[in-house]
Image (cartoon, rainbow, N blue to C red):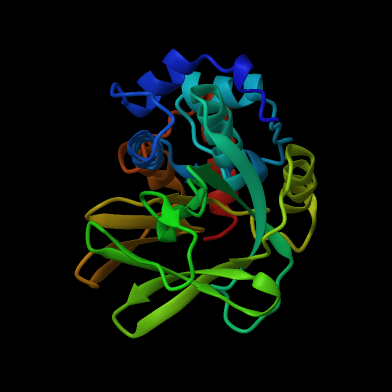
Length: 272
């Protein structure tokens, strides 16, 4: 389903820094998920540059593994699905509505995964940026997990819709909601087309980069860089065109060629 046989698994594991067991069990799933999230940043830079975003395994490997770039949810979770499938996991796709934008009813554009182990389902998501989980979350109503001080929960609403929530200082906040039916790579392609080209997409014409971490979660949106710490405190700073390339490299570990760097500086200059 996810063309895991086309993935250079050794190169992927080296990229994320995982050298442990590869049995298709919960321990491996947790370790690979955490390593992937920690190593490969969320970023929309190709969309910001007006480029096509391919989701085939060879293209994902060339970009996210060999070039040490990042990607957004369709890229992140397609690559992760291929790796998990190659290891021996049962992987299915899901499509979610983002609920972090107030009361607006947004379309189903977020791609995530569900992995089944011994009859138990786990929410697996390396592509929700700075607000996403570090490890799998049990897909059970009322589930609550603590991940290095970041707390996530799962609720179930009408029609079997699952909701991923995060515990903030002000209380529980919905992150996204998704129906229980399975999506496939072709569905990810359709959502990817919308997010990379539709004029309503928030990924067009601006830089969006995220990195969740056990101690601090960072998000660069346009010229604003926000750092949120596990104790609830946060810091904000402005990243102008002249600081952008260094910030992407030093803060997020993203390597750019000269053409990409120049193009992104132009995008950033339009925001100032």
